[in-house]
Image (cartoon, rainbow, N blue to C red; front, side, top):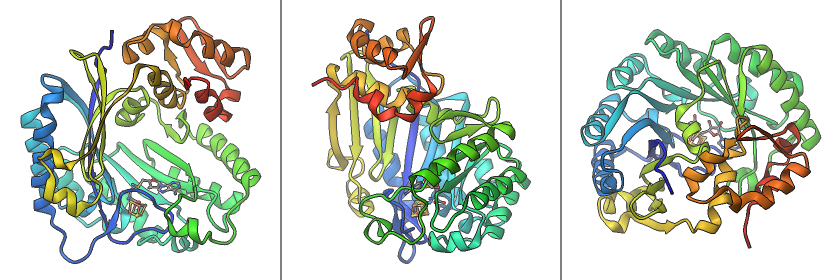
Length: 384
Ligand SMILES: C[S@@+](CC[C@H](N)C(=O)[O-])C[C@H]1O[C@@H](n2cnc3c(N)ncnc32)[C@H](O)[C@@H]1O
Ligand code: SF4
């Protein structure tokens, strides 16, 4: 039996001050005055159309992602949250995160985001090295980044994440370590530590910058940085995510545990378990903000609706769960996919025999070796 798992709400806010040359997110350089209020109206219409998919269910986390959500005035975020919480039941402990570019942090804004209900901030720091920030085309320098974090702390935020990237153009191991030291000094609850990747359809992909560390150096950086993070008390719980005890990101954890989420906003993706139909629905919205603004609230705003076929579910499940150090339990697999554990007996056996996975009672966990070859392990679960 497919059993609906916890539900989250993702809200995509698609504009940025400037497009970064490495970024392939659905983010667009804002030109002139941005239609914040119209966009919030569109989000509410979009939510109204999706509501029948989740009647009666409780929302455990909300994530405003981008783009640069911190471009939106706190009053606009407040209006959306009021509309959403009057339509959906929010859990009392609901985690509500807002992504913030430090170049957009103004004095007083964080107090008002907090009053609107935002209880977690995620900062796109990337690096504290001013030369690196320039090469990445960032709109802020390291001082502004530290100032933004302090403004948030003054507003009472202690639950915040810093996004850092490593293997940057011209970066040495010592520089990557210094970035972490400066991050630790700000006492974040969470650090996301991403290796810079050259994504198709970006400027960096078309014209790679000079001095990107090769794979061996990048691996070396990752290993040293992991050790520093562990020494500083950050538990490594997912490929790129590190948290102080109890401060894992509930929203991202729900994705990685194959939880359900509504995706509202331009290009947003949702995944919903339909108990009555015994189906898993993936729905995504049109990508371009202008088309989205025009069509939100009508089915013309749906980029697509797709039901995940039973034979594809083991692969999709592993794609998420095997990112997590905690792994999964076989009964959780059965509830989330609606399949018996026998459906994965064979690939599981192969992965155990290869030393990629191990078992602890009912739980299945990736080994250190398995974590190095996640893609190969996941592929075992792809059915022809
Ligand atoms: C949507 S952005 C977050 C917030 C905000 N837009 C900003 O950049 O300040 C999410 C994060 O993904 C990471 N990221 C984006 N493009 C990446 C790439 N090509 N390689 C590795 N990490 C990337 C960055 O650390 C970025 O902060
Ligand atoms: S500010 Fe963030 S979302 Fe916008 S282009 Fe840069 S990395 Fe991408």
